[in-house]
Image (cartoon, rainbow, N blue to C red):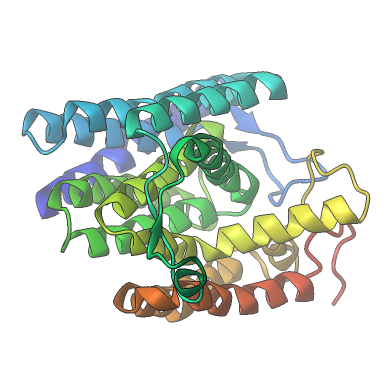
Amino acid sequence: MLLLFTVTLLLAAILTGLLRRYALTYKVLDIPNHRSSHSVPTPRGGGLAIVLAFCAATVWLFFNRQLTDSSLGLLVSTLLVAVIGFCDDHGEVAARWRFLTHLLAALIALELLNGFPAILLPAPLDTLLGRFSFNPGLLGYPLGTLCLVWSLNLFNFMDGTDGIAASEALFVSLALAGYLFFIDQNLCAVTLSLAAACAGFLLWNWPKAKIFMGDVGSGFIGLLLGLLILLASEQAAVLLYCGLILFGVFVVDASYTLVFRLVSGQKWYAAHCSHTYQHAAKRYGHLRVLLATWAINLGWLLPVSLWIFQHPSHALAGIGLAYLPLTYLAYRFKAGQTELLTS
């Protein structure tokens, strides 16, 4: 696994450098506007390196019999999202076509996954319902589609400051791979490949970013991570809750911001720059926000997820514990409000 991780990381780093040269040559640039967190035109679309490096790793795993036909097909469904993202990076694609593609990719993935996996019922739900798990059946398709499309869009929403999306993907996939190491070595290798691809890209995206991920990478990663969490929960149901906790920074920021914009009568579907991390970056800068995110992930969310992994019956309490301080941060930084913060 160490060799696979190293080769995938190096491949992603090399491909990102080549894509940066391509973007500069053909003017595939992110031009700053009133919503931007950067001030100079910057190459975008570097997330394609993550897609290509990860695909190369999964093909290698497939030919070494560490990946089944169904699992490979499942992962291939994410390429639909990468393709529409690539097109959007090179010329704006209408929102309806992006949404329909995202929906189709999620439905294909769920069909190959045979629906949403059984859900662990932690305390007090197990006592109230008299069972330890719940199989959503046909309900799993709309539930799973909602979860996967939301996971996909989390990365689109949150990919707005240097390094944050790649760092989040690296953290979540590495932590998930750590759990899977003791449960399913093959799925662990797949998850580790995503971590390596993101790490290779992050070498170019760390503040001050030399290239941005773009929709080709953010959508692909968002859907893929959602699928990996569902696949992991098939092996151990508690990993669904662990995944939600590890994903906490993105889940809380994006959800709080969306809800605030809805209840305050704003056009929630309109582009904006009012997430917690965006307000924080305007005040403290990209690097400090990125380091703070790493501190929250490693110092808070990872320990809480470890606690839940060891005590699955406390899963709901763990999610509440993990999300509460993040919700306060969103409130403190006025997430959802369009005006800039003042010192």
